[in-house]
Image 1 (cartoon, helix red, strand yellow):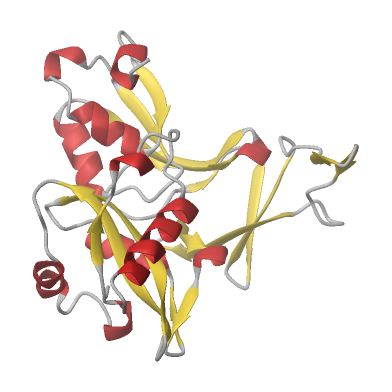
Image 2: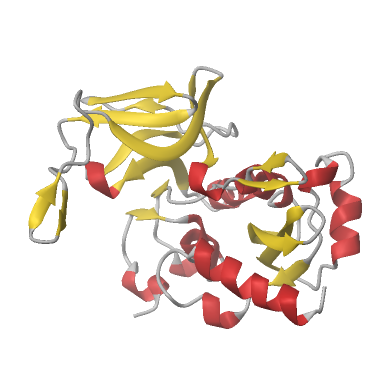
Length: 251
């Protein structure tokens, strides 16, 4: 069932940014949403601004399935943070990794016929999310698993995505590594949005916004086959697809 049809008559919903982008493409009269909790991916400021302009209040959240979802939440305010922990939840930062502890934490993962605890001896769950405290709230920088190195410089894809997502022709962006003989890996961008944006035009727009090692060396538009697999587009699938495009170009 199409998302717009499934939410017909609904006033509140929890969505990932991609879903809200697609809902906003619907006629104004068909939207009954009043409040939306966003999470599961980077939340572009342009998205919340468009939604608020159409009368939809936006909330930014940070949550995990292991904690029955939401851990932090706040009203969207133009700042990149996700607020502070809700009642009954604790967070701490250890070497920029977000650790979480709460009564709602799952008992464990069921594997090989037994339950494997997910917390350490003190009950902390090591999320593998990279975060910092900034302006009095938690800010999620990205997944530690996504970090890659280009010419010895660490590239956090989400840092680059936050910059590129501000481009007026981009509604969604993935930055993924592609192999490079000289640098080891280089960043490439896969985008969804309006118009036929070229790499040269994007790099010109990004001049002064990105360090040299963060500048994408390739730009592709997100193919249709990667858009229909679920509520979130899998970064790994995007990376594999981009790698094939890069190799096919005989670089």
